[in-house]
Amino acid sequence: MADDELATIGAAPGPVRYTSTAPTAPASPWPQRLVIAGLLLAALNLRPAITSLGSLLEEVRDGLGMNGAVAGLLTSVPALCFALFGVTAPRLARRFGPATVVCAGLAAITAGLAIRPLAGGIAGFLAASALALAGIAVSNVLMPVIVKRWFPDRIGAMTGVYSMALSLGTSAAAAVTVPITDGLGGSWRAGLGVWALLAAVAALPWIAIARGRTNREARARSADSQDGPAAPITRSPTAWALACFFGLQSTAAYITMGWMPQIFRDAGVSASTAGVLLAVTMAMGVPLSFVLPRIAARLRHQGVLVVILGASGLTGYAGLWLAPAGGAWAWALLLGLSNCAFPLALTMIGMRARTGAGVVRLSAFAQSTGYLFSIPGPLLVGALYQATGGWDLPIALMAGLMVPQMIAGVLAGRDRTLEDEL
Image 1 (spheres, rainbow, N blue to C red):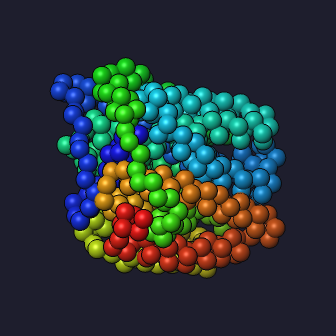
Image 2 (cartoon, helix red, strand yellow; image 1 turned 30 degrees about the horizontal axis):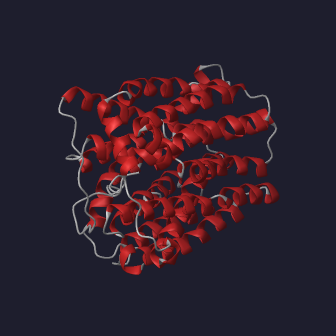
Image 3 (tube, helix red, strand yellow; image 1 turned 60 degrees about the horizontal axis):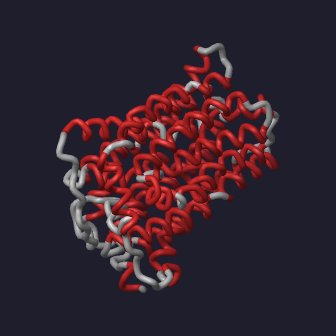
């Protein structure tokens, strides 16, 4: 991958130190319009495989005979796939071009979502889910690269559009999966499988984009790129702090997406309302994905934002413990605010390195290591729920993990760079 390809992570006005040479944008407007449509459609498909399952987790568990521990494993699969397959995206992009890999990723999402409802057992369901999530992993990593290559003069605007579409797809899948399932006769298999249609539509523009000149040039530039500094990134305290912060916020996000509807349903909230509550939580990222990175980029230390988001999460978890149904809408909003640690983490990755090469190394390390860190969380929640038959201990675990997340975020938000530490 070229040194500047991920330098746009968290791009926003402010004291970002790294620099890069922008590639030349396509001269004709229609390829850019096609890429805009492709970006929007791709982003809409990067979370429904996860949030649609969260809305129907009880029906899937009953239909496949899953216990709580296995269901916890299912909610950990996204983080595992993102860690394992996301790190392959740069190498694949160097060989085939980023647009070609995104196209293949969307094809994998389509196939996985279409096959998953047909699975007769747990192993087949997990395998099909892993196929879809592998496609999401490589596509997710390469979205900033696509923005950099095709829109070098509109990085901020296009990143905002992509982030909003991602949040919209996340919340929409949570909100409408149960009504769609009811409309299709109440079959959870049909309710999950319908999302393969949207993924198939999203793959269509990428077939043309992958054959275009800009994708071939991106492949050539990536093949000619030089590696970053030789010093191991594991020597950087900031890199470890970012990895821990990224991993813990991912833990909270995937526990929320996988288990929050079930928490509300067990408290007496209807399945459709529980799905809407999850949608509200996810929808908080739509406006805040624009605002938060811009605020963070203007601050020399992002710790204050980390603490604000963490305090929102702690309050939301306290509410889930004390009155899960009575204050459900308030807890959904607070946890949605807390989950906006994701765009904050990406912004800090971009600010903690001076050069494009440094951002690439820091992003790869923080995200891959962080996703590995996040795997045990949903598993523990499922195991505790299975062992105790209630949510007191799982919610206590979620709240307890918020404390080290805040500590790691404050350390990661200090005004220093990877290059200085190495």
